[in-house]
Amino acid sequence: MTNILDKIVANKRIEVDQQKKEVSIDQLIKQIGTANKQGLFKQSLINSSTGIIAEFKRRSPSRGWIFENAKVEEVIPLYSDGGASAISVLTDTDFFGGTFADLTMASSLTKTPLLRKDFMVDEYQFYQAAAMGASAVLLIASSLTIQETKQFAVKAKELGLDVLLEVHNEAELGHINEYVDVVGVNNRNLGTFVTDIQASFDLVDKIPDEFVKISESGISSPQTVLDLREVGYKGFLMGENFMKTDNPGEALANFIKELS
Image (cartoon, rainbow, N blue to C red; front, side):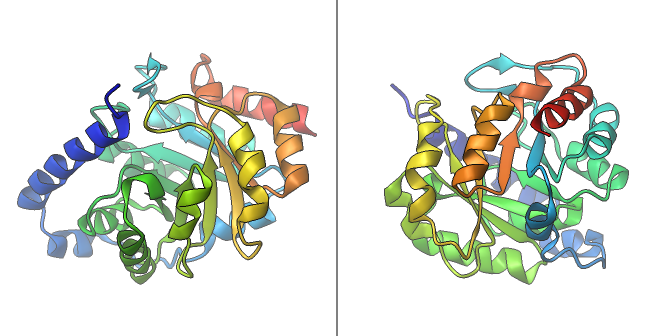
């Protein structure tokens, strides 16, 4: 079986090389706002009663199209009003149907902290994230070396971005460093896209308590959130569960009602 993550990362490197030719870092720096967003993503999770990070995602490599014609202007405000502690916006086009315009527009529509969800392979992408109005960026341990993870986390901090480090197994915990704010356990294996919520339960006690812990993928019932919260998770990244409905914002609000 071809490793899907390897394919996505190889494609991303080609994309970023092209983007660098079209827009320089100097141009991106001019687009970065003056508002200091450092700590917003992390603090929102700490302060939230629900911890739900609602994701705007049109498609995935495993499921294909989930909500092909989803519009940022219709979903994002309702995510905010519905009680999301943060919002994740996919900016990968080829595999997830996202765009840079999605994140830029989202940042103009909400004060809820925004996570740029993409496959980060180059420092250039962190300037993009800041220019688009993100509060946080995702680093995926399985696609980076330990050295790259630290280098990228340092760059994110320089640009006022919080860092969510995503791990899937115990071996990847070595990527955690002092520049990381939040550690997420992805219940989905990005090589095979097989999902098993047990990954979160297996790793929670192995992640140092100084980091905010979140569980990602495969969460569909309020009881699962309650069980994960019981063992120490503060955040829960959920996309498909809301995006597969006709009204993701309403689905989020109903889910949060069931939680309480």
